[in-house]
Length: 78
Image (cartoon, rainbow, N blue to C red):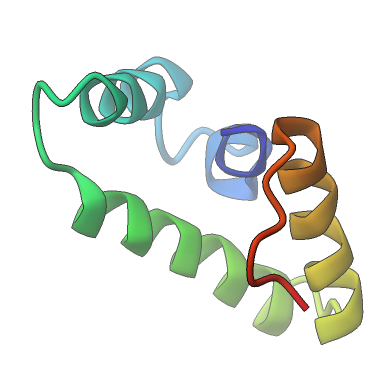
């Protein structure tokens, strides 16, 4: 959740934070299946970090791990 809400596309106003929150909440509560949309937003965020912000892979992985640690969910993350 934090990873998407801190993404550049929200900070820069390309997407409304409230809309992304609603998308996540509807998906979490099983009101709608938004897994494809959420995956695209995560992919967009990672793409932006690699190609626009010029972040290296290790930094992105550490950032994602930090978000997952907050949730206590690091299954399968290397």
